[in-house]
Image (cartoon, rainbow, N blue to C red):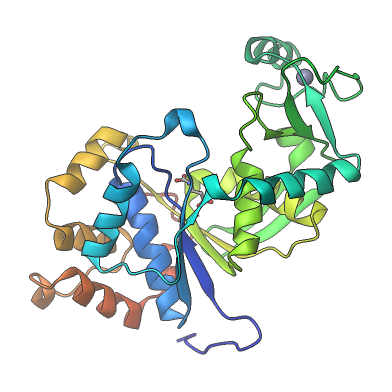
Length: 302
Ligand code: GLU
Ligand code: ZN
């Protein structure tokens, strides 16, 4: 078992839900996996609320999330970090990129971009349309980061070696949106740094974003955490659980039942004599025997 604590680099994990609705089974799985992985490594576990995307935030969601975590015994260390209170840090990171000449204004509309990238046969890739234009700052614009064709490689602890050329895959990407909201990609990099996160355990839907985050970390001279992307929860037919069905699943069940289900999905089914165990008991049991390799290469679980 790899339970030793490395004094050079203490394990600091985190869970970073978006308060866009109640926790659903997929996000609870991330909470349980990142918590158990952190505690198994005698690490700390931190909570961040990703509340930047104000138009999508649902009032009351944050307190509902905190309540579920508390009642499950998923206790976090230190204060909760709210992204909405870190805006100055994101601006400082943007200026650092600007000083390197890496940021430019993009006035393209979503519709124009769809047409342009489809014409070029590369849907979803920014075609660099504004990269050499001097868009006047008075026009509403997004800020994009200049990418280059370096292959970004990293070893995911679950999904194995990954490699992506960001310029090829997504192109120059947005670091501040047209509505002036900082993009998730830059916020997550700044926050993982300021919370001193050493290990990120999160859903596989973000595997795609990781190369962009590592690209940003390099441009900002930040170290990269280790990444582990856990499988997506699907229904027995193989379709992604909708937010509604996953959320309902949580609300209608006892929290210990949900944590039990989560551990089964994470390939750590509790023994039969723990059928009536409380959530903290189930978590302590999982922390002892946790082996993230049981999820190796798994992209979805049902
Ligand atoms: N807030 C993001 C989400 O709920 C997670 C961000 C992250 O783990 O990096 O999808
Ligand atoms: Zn543009």
